[in-house]
Length: 611
Image 1: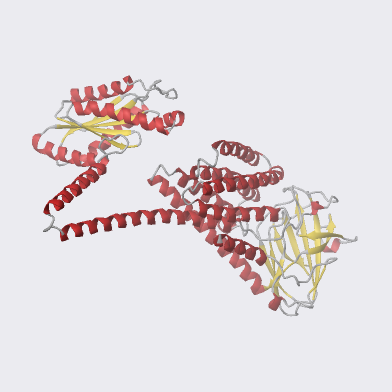
Image 2: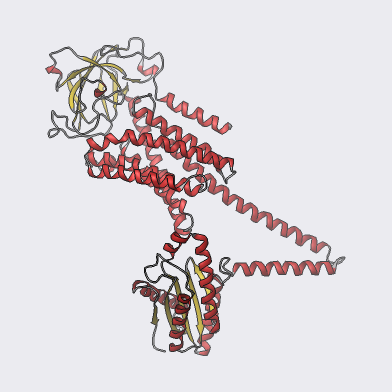
């Protein structure tokens, strides 16, 4: 629990970093007095408080009426007086600045286009603010602007228009600081987001490669894909890194990527937890959440940003409910003493807390900083820890067994003269153990057939023998048709039983002709015979196909037969020194591919050259 305390303290520290000091001056009635605040010494300021606001005014020179006072950060439609679509001019007067000092403003994403004046001089235009949807060109890129204080008072005007988003206005805080402070802040954010993006990309690719090399690790695939989607989201929020590479990417595309990644990641993340703890995270919950996410994705794809951005609050509520459910599920996993569940639970609490923090911040319920990226990074780190732990455990066991064996050998050597008979028995036992280990290393544990390693050695021996005896070598490649559908229908346990039955039947037939059958992996088997004619080879292949079909193993989802069938690829050749023996396997595999594409439950024969 000490780790949990540290994580909680870290969250609070990050939140406090994004907040001003309690003694910082506040904006009231559109004015900010800095006479008692030295920005260079006391730090930069969030320009929060009551800004003056002029609805439907586009230029400081056009002000002719008394202003409204609007709280910042907040959207202008928080007040019932203003529609989300429209435009208005914000104004702030700052006094107490140091003459001749270079200052800067950090301007976050504002909804959705703006123009900024400092002392009635245009310093920045982001997008193209307009008085109608047709005239407005939205842009959400955060910016910095720098100016020199020619006098102690500075007037800041910001024209904001919104005709594309669900909310308009200054929904995030502007930051005032010295030029160096603002540059440092922006650079740190860019570095952090770049680091986070790179870490997620590497983690995503790493887990996907793990899956490619070990297909059973489906949770690695899901986690890798989730990391890639999160990395894409990081590119379009915060400092909008994507605009560094694609500066002309349309605003609508950026906002769609932001929402799509949000709506897609949650179901992926939930399925990952199901694969991690299948007994605790129910698949029905995952399916319902996936269906809901699909509806939200369709809304984003086929409606305008103004429409689909209204869906975010509903999905945020769904996100919080999902996170609470997952936390409860992982807690049950801890109670059930599942592997590595404690570290997953602790990091899940941290990640859930950062997500809830961001949801509350986006909905302007608290003032904080974006933390979900850091939360995800911690969770990824926990997964790396779990993987490292499993490898460490494997190495520990190997070292333990090695030390035990070394110790046993040492004891046997010491007592060889005194206990000859006992030593011989021990040696015999060790030999039996070695034979058992050797047999296990050459045997597929499910079907009890030889494995790929054993087959490769036997095949090389037969090939070399064929060089001298001029005997025909034949390879038979078998693949159970529609086996994935079979597993999905009947479950993996029955799938394993079927693999055993099919392997037993194939082995019986091939071995009856003096050949060898091995399991290649998954639903694939490979056979080897020698000294048969081409006609006999074809008959053997057809016999194996028919005998598997005659087993009558029910397969209702097969598109070929209502029973389990196999496709067969055959290649035969006389051994020659100009050919590599592995080429024969490749040709058999090509023949199998032809059988699969030609309707399955068929035999295809590839002859390398006339014998």
